[in-house]
Length: 617
Image (cartoon, rainbow, N blue to C red; front, side, top):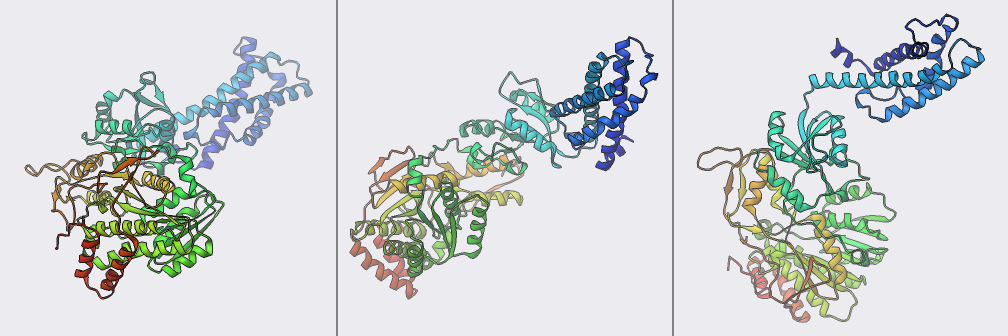
C-alpha cells in the first residue's frame, strides 16, 4: 500500500496534502479551545460554523504562498517559514471573521494557542510525509552508494544534488574537522577519515567523492594517496575557480585526474602581464581549435580583448571552439577564419583587415611518431608555417608574435622536436631584423595533461576497454602541466618578451610514465595485474621506444638561464643563426620539400639544428 502511495502522480499527492489540511486546521482550532478551557469536551456549539469556515479561509492562502508547490521528498527547513507566514495570515483573517460574526463565546486567547498549534500541525504533517517518502525510497533505492570527503558547503551542495538525481545515493561523509565528526548533514552521518575503509565496507560503498574544491592540490594529493590502493573509485569536484557562483552540479563531478596527483598548486596569474597583450586589443590565435590553441582562446576571452580571431585549418575544430566560446557572455566580436598558416597572403589579409595586434601561434603538428613518418609535412607545417605566419605578422604590422614551442626542441631526437627548434631559430632570426616593429618571442614547455598528444587520453581509453595499458619503456619520464596553467603562463610570458626571447616554463618534477599508468588504473578502482601470478584487472605492457622518442625530456639547451619576475617563468639565452644566412638555408630546404626529397630535408634539419640526433643518419 505504502509503495503504491509513493508512486502516485504528483497531482494526487497534492490533493492528499490539501485534504489533510482540511482536517488538521479545524483540529488545531479545537485543540486550542480545549487547552484554553482545560477540558476534552469544550462547548463549541454556538460557533461550530467556524470549524467549517476556517479551511476555506486558510487553504487559499496556502495555495497563494506556494505551500503545495513544494516537492515533499526534498523539503528543507525553509518550509517552516512558509507555514509560519501562511498560518499568521490565517489567524488574522480568522480574527476578522470572529469580530464581524460577533462570536463572543470563543476565548480570544485561544487564537494565540491556535496560531502555535496550526504551525505545529501543518509543519509536522509535511516533515512526517517527507520522512515516509524517503523511507520508502530507501527500501527500493537502487542508486549506487557514494561517500563524500568534505562535509563543508561544497559537500552539502553535492549531497543535495546527488539525492535529487537517479544515479548516486550519499551514505557517509568524512571530514578532518573533529567538531563535525559524529554529526549528521542532511541526514547523512559524518565520520572520521581514519575509519573510512571500515565505514565504506560496512555500507558496501566503493566510490568516494572528494568535495573540497578550495583545497590545495597538495592536500588533494595526500587524500588521493590514502585511497588509491584500496580499490576505491575516486571522483572529485573542480577547483573553486571552475565552479559557477559556488553552485555544485552533478555534471561538475569528474573522475580524479592526473592533475590532482601533481601535488603542485598553480601560481595565480599576474593580471598586469596577462592583460597587457590582450585587454582592448585585437588578438589572433592560429591553431585555435587544437588543445593548446582552444585553451588560449578560453583564457583570452576572460581578459576582454576588443576582438578575437580564431584561425584554424580544420573545419570541425573551428566550429567546436566557436561554439564553446559562444556559450560565454562576451561583449566583443569573435571571428572564425578557416585558413592554412602556409598561405601567408591570406593570413596577412586577415591581420590587416581586422587590425590584429597580438598573434599566438599554436598551429603545429606535434605527434612524434606521425611527424617522424611524414617528415616533409612536419617541416612544412611547423617550420614554414611559422615563417609564413611571422612574415604575415610583420607585413600586417602586428605588435607581438608568440610561438608555442616544446621541450622536445631541446637536443631533439625526432623530426617534430627538430622542426620546433628550427621554428624557434626562425623567430630568433626575424627578431634580429630591425626593419620591422613586430616583437617576437617563444614559450617552451613540456606535456600538457589532456592534450591531443598526451598519453593520458590514451591510457583512459585503454583502461575503459579493459587494457592492457601500453608504456614504451619502464624508465621513460615526462614533465606535465595542466592545459589552463600552461595557457595562462604563455599569455604572461608573451607580455615579457623584448624580442627573440626564449621563455621556459617551470614544469616542476618529472613523472615516470609507468607510475602514471599505475596510478590511473588504481584511481579507476581497479588493480594492476601482476605479470607473474596473473592476478589483477589491468595489465601494463612495455612496447619499446618509438622512433625518435627520448627517455628523458629537457627544457634547456645550455646553462644560460635566468629567472623572470614570475616564479614559474624563466628566460634562456639560446644560440641563433644570422637572419640572412638562415633564410638562404630555408630556401634550399623548401626546394627539397617541393621536390619530395626527404633525405635532403633531414640533412638540412641536421645542419640547421646541430643538437638534432637523427637516428636514421
